[in-house]
Length: 284
Image (cartoon, rainbow, N blue to C red; front, side):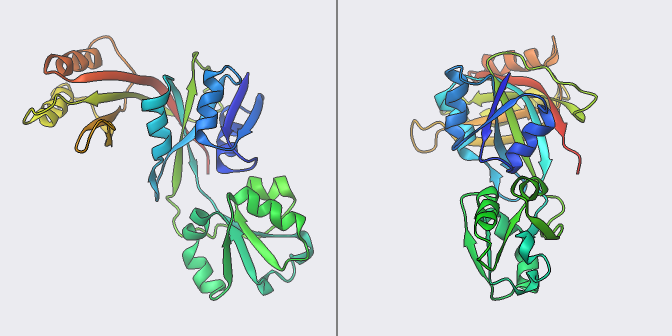
């Protein structure tokens, strides 16, 4: 089996792949659409892409491509804690407090604002395309008196020394990744921290109908179906036209969820099943 992910190597996406698929061939891609296209073209069997971050919110390109461009079921989800570290070239491990520039992705730098403001106030921060790209740059340029911010896998991959662990501002920062495939995906649940199951639906409301969203929510509420997320996205057919992405915290059954879907369709909603799948939480 081949698993594609948003690269380059040693990013948090790569960590999610290693968590769920430790013994398969993994292939990094430059963009999220490239991952989707590779699955559709049968170049890979599974794509793993980010969909939501605690601090940054939803990854819109993932949602839009999943809804508007391809038809791929969600086969699983994995949540990865975002832990950032300060790392330097081994030659500078004893003089790291004298660094003059810090490299990383803009999100990683923003996630470490308090540390940088306290420890390196006034030091230049240069943005890179990824945390892994920053680490690679430090590795290949030992003459530069700089450091990189990234995860532990990044330091291991590029042979850097972590001089300060856990420099991120928030200990509750996580990223959710979707696992997408044309075919069912099997997991070794005893190893992969199974946390539960979800069912994801796309619901488009009937136009010009007062109270339609209330009726949608009522269809789930009286059946005691718990919604763990509801998000609106534009249909791209005109201003003010939206559909809703709804996540339920249970797997598809034979009665309750089909009954709710039938009720939604009866009031004029369009309902599309995006997937019913297990979700996993990576250990900290």
